[in-house]
Length: 54
Image (cartoon, rainbow, N blue to C red; front, side, top):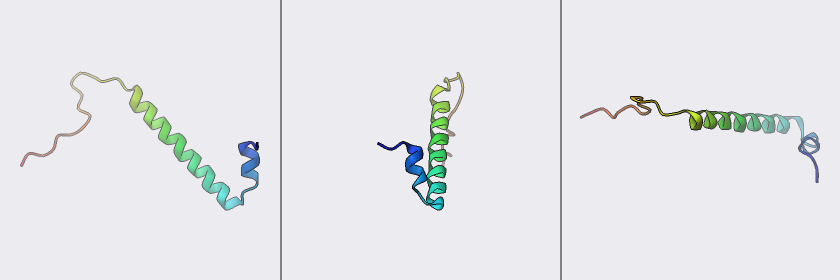
């Protein structure tokens, strides 16, 4: 079985950039999710604004 690096080396440069960009996107998405999951609820905090009243 190939390592990710060996697999990546076989790709053309433009596809490597796409793979790298996608991996960075996934890592940032995970970081954001972890930050929101670890955030503790605070008394009196409103996470979602209320809908305007008609």
